[in-house]
Length: 207
Image 1: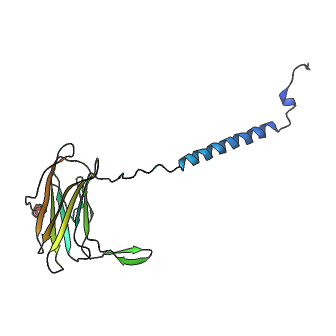
Image 2: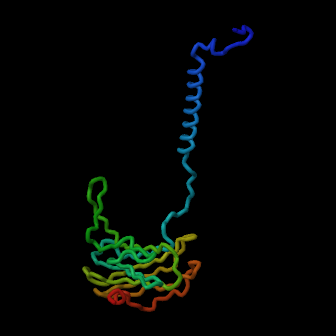
Image 3: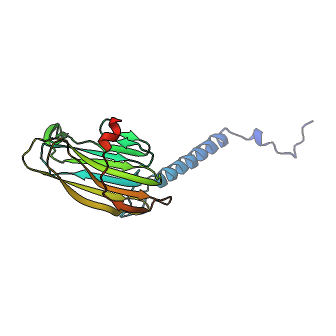
């Protein structure tokens, strides 16, 4: 028995209601995606002066650009590990750049080979181990007349950049080794006990 007083929505559906809801849903979804992409592409505010370096301390050894002489850096940590060109990682100390004077001092820029005369070695300390650190320089290969002035800079990076040590030593002969800086780090990374009492790290690695 059919009741004429009841309205059946399906009986008047001409097929346009469902497609309309699909179109509306897709439009809203597309709008949401565009809003998400717009927020993702917003450039964060740059913070001038912030340094993002994966290191607590940086040791830089340099000598005059263009000189052919090969100067090597040796660094010993409190555990007795010695970093040098044959052992570039030991504990938390890393020799990031080994320089051999003018040997292979070229780089490729826009497909062209150009001279790169910078003479510089870099060592990073990537964590704090309390105790004494020793920094030596060694005159590996003499190829120029006269002495070579070698500058050593020790910087503490965290929580802010500060120079712990800066000095220059003259290397006059092949095979010469000089202790340029010895310092102690406490548990908080503070530097104490800075001195230059000689200690041969070349002999240490030969043991």
